[in-house]
Length: 169
Image 1 (spheres, rainbow, N blue to C red):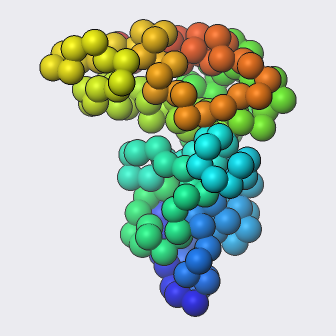
Image 2 (image 1 turned 90 degrees about the horizontal axis):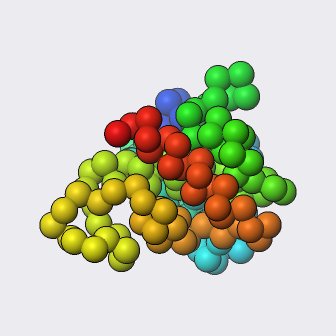
């Protein structure tokens, strides 16, 4: 057992947990942030994506004790049904979900993707590694490729992200 403390959605949380507990299980089972989903539990689907210190990660591949002092944002920390984050609202507007299981991870990833682009971090789809990346459909699809949607709402997801990217430009 080990003590760990991190900030989740603006609130410091302290846990005494088994050192083998993943961040995903700490969030879901110990802190009741059930919006973050367990899909494959192998880092292949992206359903468990959360934002840690501004970077998106697969929480199923990371041990909770590795995040001592970190700031973690889950889907619950982005917005509420009454006060949605712009990305959540765009997903609703563009029907960027069908069954909804992957949606929390998709939205967390999409928020971080736009921050990556704004910061000038290139991707495999970036044509010029010295130029600032743009939020093109190709760029967004490459960056979001780690988030799988079994229902196939990909074009709607790209439309939602593109709309929010246009507001940030």
